[in-house]
Image (cartoon, rainbow over all chains, first blue to last red; front, side):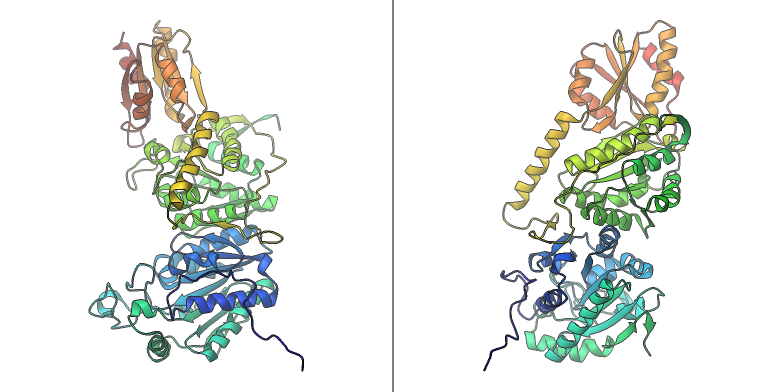
Length: 251
Length: 348
């Protein structure tokens, strides 16, 4: 009986120790990106934009040319790089503070121009690197370092839904929300990221994948409880679905 | 391209950038430099380049950063309040050693100030401007010909030293039309083996300003300053006029130096021996050169369109050899020839 290798360490990821916390979703998404780079054979043409936040060191893991952006500016930096390196694959990796607070303008306008980039948005409803402050996606009532009595929408506004916001624009080609709280959803996320990158390779335009993710450390819960919280609290507010495909809004 | 043509200062910068091989330009509108984005919007598509009006100055300078990392010659332009916003990207590019050309056609400040030409951003330009230990190479042209010539030079220096190079002009220089001879087109651009082009047949390139490991940032900053020392040694530019027999020395850059030249004619006609020392690179400042010049005169008058910024560099470098006086006009006003004349006469 011949043996078939069905799982191995992705070639496009460096074999180094992770700095991400136990139960964090970043490592899962990094692995998916690396697997997809291997499957599509694009490791030599991928340009990885790292944001400010926990994933600023993404270039230490993803084995591709990497560039670090200022906080919130990743879509603008990606725009400049892609306009020069037109035949490369630019992956713009961002967190919730980066994408929806300090970088709202850059996010909206890169999407509105239909930049030929792939935006991977990790939504874990909190600021990780700075130690657990309120994010634009923090849930109503959620306790963080800067909402010690729970997020009060009357005072600080409601959590922002990125996919729905960007879906009001004309230009985007593909918008989908996924999650990584269980294997089924991780597999769906992989499909979405792969599609978003393939779109760029095919010159289709702007693709956006939001991924609901866990931050057990700053939520102050064990990893499994964090995964459950994404499913039970985040998903009802941030529905998992494809909002736009092939430039057309989904029904 | 050796015939003289008439061109507005801001447009001369745009054409010179294209002649220098710049094919990517990102900016956000602001007066008094709007002729630059308008010119680039028209010209860049004609030469296969990319013009993009950004959503903000923060975005524009970040686009510049991305394009620079991709290996392109890239430029942005703005005026004082917009340059303040660009400081974020300038600091990041300085930390990541990414070359770029940034034009500041200064206007009156602080804040929104006004839209007249001014020189109130000297400190911001020469002291770093953004956060951290770094320098920007600052060139201050004095006429439209120099705006064109030094724009080309700025791209060369930016690439040579992997540094942000700033053209520091002002609203008056940008708006005036003068005859000029356009510079020669740059035929061969320098290779950039550090650029992000995809890790094909090589290890991945990482371009970042973050240095978290123990001691890593210390070493990095020392490396930056080794580069700055080379620039200070090799790239000082300055100009003098009528200094050979001068008893008094005016020190001014950019538009202020033009007013000084007129004052020198008036004073010389009255037999008062006065000359001009004009720093062209403001960083690196012509330290040794101004010190040497100071040894030969009785007194220095620094003239600026500000409340006194460059005068500090003059005092530091020339102050031990002679008295340094100051005359300035803030708020977008030009220095007045008669005031310079009267001040110098008071020294006699």
